Image 1 (cartoon, rainbow, N blue to C red):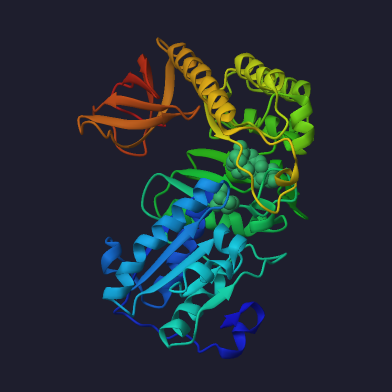
Image 2 (cartoon, rainbow, N blue to C red):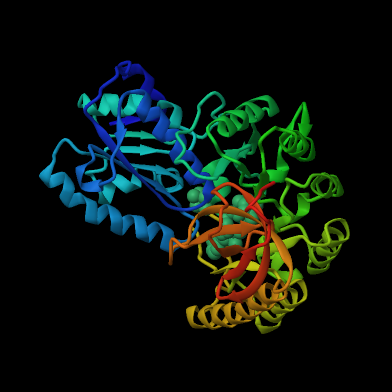
Length: 458
Ligand code: SAH
Ligand code: SF4
Ligand code: F3S
C-alpha cells in the first residue's frame, strides 16, 4: 500500500484519457463544495468528464465531513451501499476525500477494503496523478499529509453555472474550540494572497457569476503581508461586476470595527453576518474555548447594529455540551431572544474522539439534548417568522437566482440579508437585483412584488 510521503516515488505522469467519467458527492460545509469544484477541474484536465449518474461513473468520490457523528455515519452507509457497484464493475474506482478521510485515514480500509483512494483536504493537487496510477493497478492510495502552506493557488475550480461563486480565501483553523474536529482535519490557518483571490474573482465574473462568497473556516483570521480581512474585503468590493459579496464564517472574536466600516462603505457587501454563538452561557463558552463571554457577544451585536443598523444576523448553536445545565441552556435562549437571529443552524453536541471535550466527564444524556434542541428550534422558528413578518410592507433588494421550485411563473431570489424571497415573474432576468415590496412571510420565505418599472436592475 502506498502511503503519504512515499507516493511520489511511484508516480507515473498522467496522460489525457477521454473515455472515463467521474461523479463527486459532497457532504459537509461550503468549503467542501468549493474543494469538489477544484477536484473536478483537476480530473477534467486529464480528460475525465462529469457523469450525472453515479451507477455509470468510472470514478466515484465522496467528499466527506466529520463534524458530527451523524455526518460520518451517513458516509459509512453510503459506502456500504456503493460496494455493490464495484461487484458489477471491477474497474470502478471509489475514493473518500475530505475531512473524514483525514480523520480516519487507514482505519477506513479496515472495514471497507474496496476503497481505492483516501485523500485528505491538502492532497488534491495530486488527485489526477493518483487516479491515473490507481487505474494502472498501483494499490490503495492513502495521502493525508496536512500542509502548512497549501492554499491551492493557481488551481482553478470547475464551477457549476449559477449566480454565486464560492471563493476560498484561507484554509485551516487554529482556534481549537474544544468540541470541534476541524483543526485536526483541516490543519493550520493559512491565507491565499490578495492577488490570487482577486484574479480568481475576475475570472468568475468573466464566467458570469455576480455574487461572490468568501470562504474560510475562519474568514476573518485572514492575514497576509499585503493586508488582513478588511483590506481584502475592500479590494473585492471594488472589483467591477461584483454585484454582491458575502463571507462565511467569521469568528466573533475577530469581527472588528475595521470590518464593519468597510461593510458600511460599500453597497455591494451584503449587510448580513453569520455569527456563530455556540452557547449563551459564559461558563460553557469558557469550556468550549470560544474566547468570548455572553456579554462580549451581546456587546458585539450592539456594535454591529451601530455601524450597520439593518444588518441581519444568523448563527450556529450547540445544545447539550458537557456540563450544560438548565441555567446554561436558559442563557442560550436568552441570547437568542435578545439578538433575534433571522436564521440559525442548531445542533446537539456530538462527541468527537480526539477533541478535548470528548474527554470531559459530565456528558449530557441524549434525551435532554433532544428536549433542549426541540425547545430551541421552536423559539428560533417563532423569532424567524417574527423577523420575516417585520419585513412586510418594506422594500428589499432581491437578487434573482432561479425559477421558484413550486412554479416557473415565479422567481426565487435572496434579499441582501439572505432571506429567500419569491416574486411573480415580470420582465426581470436571473442575476438582476430588483426592488421588491414584501407582501407576505411564510415558513422560511418572503413573498413580494417587483416594483421596478421595467424589471430593472442594479
Ligand atoms: N468555523 C466555523 C464553524 C465550522 S463547523 C465557526 O467557528 O463558526 C460548523 C458548526 O458545526 C459549528 O459552528 C458548530 O456549531 C457545529 N459543530 C462543530 N462541532 C460540533 C460538535 N462536535 N457537535 C455538534 N456541533 C458541532
Ligand atoms: Fe471549529 Fe472553532 Fe475552528 Fe470554528 S473556530 S472551525 S468551531 S475550532
Ligand atoms: Fe465538515 Fe470538514 Fe467542513 S468536518 S464542516 S467538511 S471543514
